[in-house]
Amino acid sequence: MKIIEPYYEILTPISDGGINELKFIEKVGRTCYKSENNITDDSAKKFVANLIANNHSAIIEHSFLSVKFVVDRGVSHEIVRHRLASYAQESTRYCNYVLDKFDNEITYIKPLFDENKSEDRWAYQLWKEQAKQAEKCYFELIKNGATPQEARAVLPNSLKTELVMTTNYTEWRHFFKLRTAKNAHPQMRQITIPLLKELQEKIPIIFDDIKIEE
Ligand SMILES: Cc1cc2nc3c(=O)[nH]c(=O)nc-3n(C[C@H](O)[C@H](O)[C@H](O)COP(=O)(O)OP(=O)(O)OC[C@H]3O[C@@H](n4cnc5c(N)ncnc54)[C@H](O)[C@@H]3O)c2cc1C
Image (cartoon, rainbow, N blue to C red; front, side, top):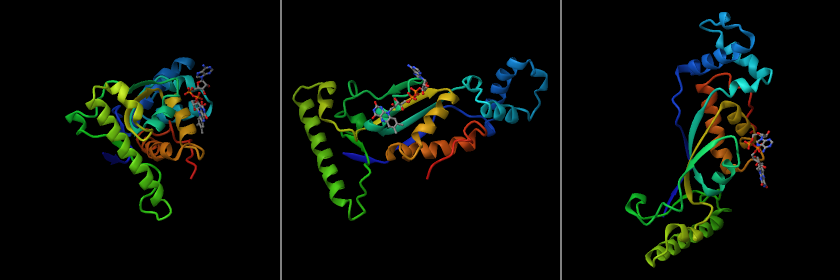
């Protein structure tokens, strides 16, 4: 079995400084006021900032962003509760982890228990034993004729999954407000906080007002 850290990858190409993305939203938004003649090389940032300040969120919906998350099944289940998005997820019905392309092993996402902390060590060991046992049972079931969709019943929430989420900036804003908050699951925050910080750098204005609770 393999144990990995969760991570994400931004799949949508973003222009230098996010300027093309902001200009597009400006072009859409100026339809409302027929103020296209006010478009200049540097008018987009201010225009989009005003849209956000005034909750004119429908205009920000004229956008899209795809992100691939590599997380555990527990976190992925929370992500797919966001209904205004499209998803593609690694299938435990069709992926057979016994095969070479999966290195003939089950991949797990490292749990919250810290193996290097003395107070956590017993919990980590318990988790690891269970993960090994689940892998053993999965392989045994497949060896004896079970299909992946049957054998998956023994796999735990820590199973690694890959999930692409595509939606517009308005929904991403909602997602970040909920999923970086203090009461979000710590393993959700492990990826949403760095993702939000990266997007705040790559596309100015759109996500700037979302404060990260430490
Ligand atoms: C800390 C936390 C704990 C949670 N605990 C639980 C739990 O114990 N059990 C559980 O089942 N879920 C739980 N959830 C999931 C939660 O109930 C939502 O399903 C999830 O956060 C998606 O949020 P949403 O519905 O606002 O967003 P989205 O589905 O992303 O929708 C965005 C917005 O669109 C609007 N919208 C979408 N669909 C509709 C609709 N059909 N009708 C009206 N408006 C709509 C709403 O304004 C909504 O806020 C939890 C979420 C969080 C963040």
